Image (cartoon, rainbow, N blue to C red):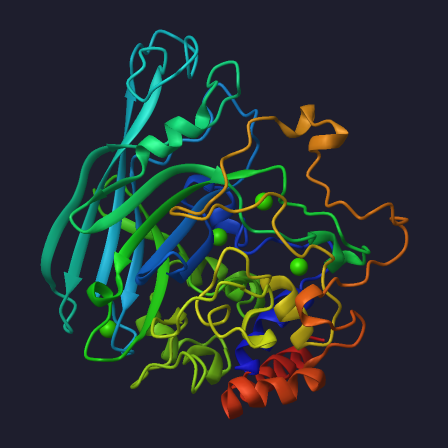
Length: 454
Ligand SMILES: [Ca+2]
Ligand SMILES: [Ca+2]
Ligand SMILES: [Ca+2]
Ligand SMILES: [Ca+2]
């Protein structure tokens, strides 16, 4: 397990000065020019308030400036946004959830997103809105489609939060788009970006300032019964998300792929990142990109499928129950319900991975705003633009008056560790306790990678 964890740490530590990127925000040349199709993060966890259900969240469109009107941030209407599950470890898809979006205008001669205060989803003052169709597709081992269920047709998308004057009660708008039907709870729309990090620490900064704090993303989220996505008594599922774009020929071409955070940035050379974005897990074992094997199989004793073919996926053991007191360092801190066993919104993947390589954290221990206690758990999107931020809304993490020129100790809180030295050697005893040899192998792989890159 440490090996997987350490691999993630490397992802960050190998970023060259000036090249810092967020989890998977604008990480490759091709996708950087296509923000509507750019996966930023993927989350998968056993629902804390409904342990018989898995929550899956995929985010898109990095760095949405809240004041970015009048168009704001629609999903692309020529795209397929997908979350795919491999539930037998063979690296081939078994279940795909596919979202497709349609745009609607009340009056295309009007320039605005709204024409007055919007108090409901059917308010005529909402001039632009989107709806979505959601399919659940099941695949046979030979890649053929065995069945499709339409879970949603023309359901409303939560609009971009364009500000209090136009949307005085955004909370109500968001609550009304969360729907349960066909046994699944679903959401699509704008949300506050849950990824938190000080990207400047990779350029030598002392950290402590959440670079992503001012921005929103577009999210799709699902809550499905565990029994619906697992198979054959194996509780481990692998998950990845993709976006495909329709070409002039009518064919859909995949342009973005994301499983574990930071993989494309760390392991994949810049020249190959667009290729990774177009690839599928079933080809990973033959990929020329050298990703340590343990990184592709999940961690033994934690989240490795009973039978596994190596491939890059976010792997979740659904039989590990959620905890009422999640630790931000996840498995590293003895909390097996967290990263790299799936990924929760609160998991501090930057600190987890940097610790694996002996580096201090980034001084940002949590998202800038709290997450919610029920589906879709995401915080409401921000409505005030970066350019208009005052000191109280700047997104800066309160450092309690600490001189910003002084390096920030990593606040470890629940783990009671100090910032400076918590490298892999410190984690070995813990790793042995929670993940055994697999965890150690995971860390070793990260170190191997780090040596190669340095
Ligand atoms: Ca991306
Ligand atoms: Ca499969
Ligand atoms: Ca945030
Ligand atoms: Ca952190």
